[in-house]
Image 1: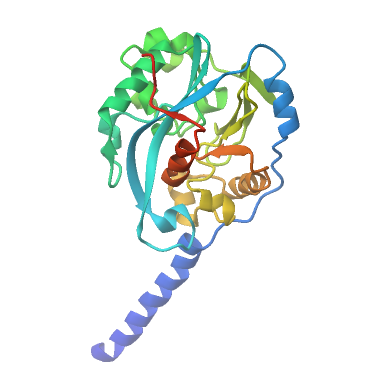
Image 2: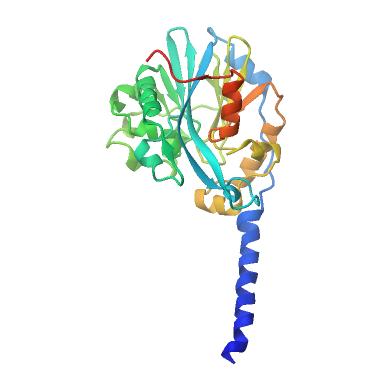
Amino acid sequence: MRKKRWPWVVLAVFLVLFLVKRPLLDTHAAPTGEFVIDLAALHQVATAKGGLPEQIEVEKIGDFAFPQTLVVAGSGFHMHPMILQVHRVLWPGRSLVIDTAMAPEAAAQMPGSHADAAAYGRLQAALSRANLIVVTHEHEDHVGGLAKAPNFPALADKILLTQEQLSSPKLKREDFAAGALESLKPLSYSGLYAIAPGVVLQKAPGHSPGSQLIYVELANGARYLFVGDIAWTAENIEQQIGRPGLATLLMKEDRGLVAAQLRALKGLPKDVHVVIAHDPVTFERDVKAGLFHQGFTGL
């Protein structure tokens, strides 16, 4: 009798795995509502006051890999390469840093990771020289370099973490020194908010409560939209397929809101350079096209 039961047990196990695999790994979410990216309004706010920035630099701090099916739902189990990158917006005599990656020791915990210690050192020097520091969202791989900054107290007055980012359960408060976060003045805004000439914020919760778009317009007319982790790869936007349900469970993101944001990004004109934080393919393409200068200079 026990031998006769085994085929049915095996069949039941495969059936359960099949039923679980589809909602957790193969299915992407439909958009919830409409997310609007008003380029005309962003341009108006960006150019309302002061001289626009002249250049954007980029540093690749490290790389890692995730299973492809966690990046694009239903896409298979081979490892998908991802990177950690940070950007520096430059005006004559002024600079602004967008995102801060994570410290090498934290990056080492990521699967398949490699850290560039020299690039991380240049990031820390750039934070010290920056006039403003802003992040697309509050996850460790975007605020970790800031959390571990050895001169955090000296940076406090130029750190623009939003109220949503500072109060988010996804912010790893234990990564910061005692009292560090309490020393910051939360940034509160609604609508479109210019933090410097040519740089405008727009809230985009979904991947995290504190997620936001960062729009940058240069003096030469080039337009950039830093989207953080709304997409992990250009395929999320091009194919309109986001992360699967398992990723949602792990990160507790609102996939419906993210899907609406992916749809809005898909509708942008081609001359708006969408900057995807972890995509090595678009990183190499954009550097080759001269959209960014690779390497922080003058530090």
